[in-house]
Structures are given as structure tokens and as C-alpha cells.
Image: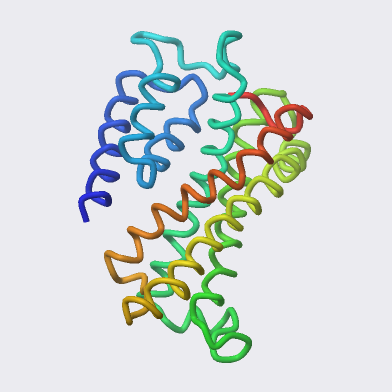
Length: 227
């Protein structure tokens, strides 16, 4: 519970701080608070050291400063992707909790005995849509692209990164469910429990780790924008 509360408090503080020090790239005003939901105090450290805008700074879109370490640019790129994944997962899990029939649409009791697997399909779809949208609002203004070209470039930039993130997230949640909670603790993780969202914080960190090398390659190849 403490970890979840700290995530919400850090996210709230960063969001408030950004009203006074808005990000040069406006989409990062969303990315930092959303990422804080799972990154908590570690993310706060990263924001204060590498993400916080100087007081009175211009808000127009710009790239990272020349002295920003490449490893930090990669981390920001991974968080950019992860914010879309996080929002997609929150929406999907909440929908499946409050409207259980949603999971049936994605194969529960038909293709999958496990409800979790069916919800993962919805997770991926929503995360993909939000991730592409996040990339679109980064790439299009930076490169001065048309709507069509912006969408194409956003798809290229986000598909591999998002998939790598979800693989890490799914892998950790599967381990938590089938390797720890059911066999050891004797109960299942469910999205209406504190334990589920606590594990999701670690799952998102796992997603960050699996997507980091993919983002490294995407930035090196110039497919994804440096932030």
C-alpha cells in the first residue's frame, strides 16, 4: 500500500510542478507523472536530475540538450513508451474488473481458461493505441510531418518498443501469478486487489528493462526521437 500511495503522491507532485515548469515537449507533461505511478521515488530522482525544466523556460518543442547523456535519452524514450503502456493497462484492467464480460470478447472461457490472458490482449491493444499517439505527438511536430507521415513514423518508432515493454510486463505478472501467489501464498492476483497493483509496479519496471535495449537501437538508428 505504501508503494502505491507514494506513486500517486509523486505523480501528483510532478504534475503540479509541471504547471510551473512545463516540459518543452508537451507530451512529457503526461509521461513523467504517469511513469511516477510505478517508478515512485526513483522516478522522482530521475525527474529532478534529468527531466525538470528550468524555471521560466520556453515551452516550445525541442530536442535534448547536447550534454544530455545518451543513456538518459534512451531512458526517457523507454519511459515515453511505458507511459502509454501504463495508461493502457490501467484502462484495460479496470474495464475487465467493472465489466467482466469484456474479457469474454477477447477469448476468456473460449480460447483461454485464464482471464488474465484474455485481458492481456485488450492491454496490448490499448497500450499500442496510446503508445502510437504519444509517439505521433512527439515525432510529427519535431519533424514537421503530415498527419499520414506522422502516423507512419509513430508506428515504426513504437511497435518494437511497446512490444518489448509488454513482454517484460507480462513475464513478470505471469511469474508473480503462477510462480508466487497461487503456489506459495494460496490465492490469485486480481485487479481489484492492492497486491495486483503492487505487482504491476514491479511489472512496469520489468517492462522498462526489457524495452531499454530496444529503445537504444531505435535512437541509434534515428527511428525514434531523442528526448
